Image 1 (spheres, rainbow, N blue to C red):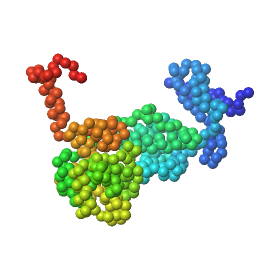
Image 2 (image 1 turned 90 degrees about the vertical axis):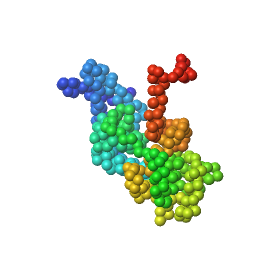
Image 3 (image 1 turned 135 degrees about the vertical axis):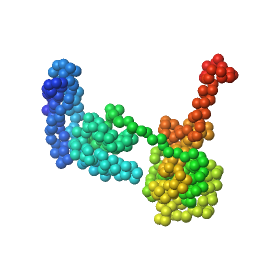
Length: 389
C-alpha cells in the first residue's frame, strides 16, 4: 500500500520563445509558530530541447521527489533569514572570538540583512546567492565579498543542520568579480625599519623591534606576557592575541607556536624591562593606564604614523612589519619552509603567495644572471652540454 504522503507531482511547459519544463509538488514545513503546513514548491527541470517528452520530465522530477517520498522524511522548518540570523548570533556567533563576532555582525548589518533579511531561508538558493554576490561586487572588493559569503555560508549551514529548509553555499558554483587593480602589500626596506626604530619613542620603539625581528602579528605582540619570553631557550611563545584590549585565542592552531628570539632582540627586551616597562598584574609587556594591552589601531595612529610622517614614508599598518620580516628572510637565503615555520602558516602557499616580496635589486640581478648565461657569446660553463637537473 502506498504511503499517505507519497507524491508523483506534476509537470507542465511554460514560455513560448524558449519553453521550459516546470515541476511542482507539495511539501510539509514547520513554521515559526510550530504549526506544520503543506506548501507548494516548483523547480525548473530543463528546456524543451533538453527534455523532449513529458515522460522524461517526470523522470527528472523524481530526483526532487526522492527526498519527500523517502521513508525517513520529516517536515522541514522555515523562517526568514533575519529571524534565523538573530538566533544564530545569540547561540552560535556568541561562542566565537570577539574579532570574529564583530566582523560577522558587520557583514550582517551592512550587506546580508538589507538584501536578504526578508527572504525565507528556502528562497536563498543558488540563483539568489549569485545575485547577492553580483550586487556585492559593485560595492566591495573580491576579498570582502568572499568574507561576506563565508558568513552567509556559516548561517545557512547551521540552519541546514538544525532542520531548516535551505540550500548551503557552494563556492564552486559562484562567480566572483575580479578586482580591477590589485594593490601590492606594503612593506619596508631594512634601512627604513632601522630609521623607524631609531625615531620612535618607547614603548613603540620596542614594539616595532619585536614586530620586525620576529614577524609576529600586532595582536600577538600586544598579548605577550613576560612568561612567554624564554631568554634561556631563545624563543617567544605565542599563546594568545589581544584585540581592542581584550584577550582571545590566536588566529589559528598553527599560529600558537614559538618563534625564535634573536639575541639582538633579547638585549632590547632586557633593557626595556629595566628602564621602560610598567609593572602590571598580568605581566604584559605593553599596557595602557588601565593595565590592559593597547589597541593595535591606537599603536598605528599615535605610534607608527607620526614616525612615518617624520621620515616621509607613506602611511601603513603594523602588518607591514610582518611582510618585511618574511621578505628579508627570503632575501637572506632562508628556504620557503623556514619562512612558513617562522610566520606559522598552516599552508605554505599563503607564505609564498602573500609574503614573498622581492627586496631591492634581487629580481633584476637574478634575471641578469640568467640572461648572461643565455647570450650568444657567453663563456662556457662547466656543465655545458649537460641537462640541467
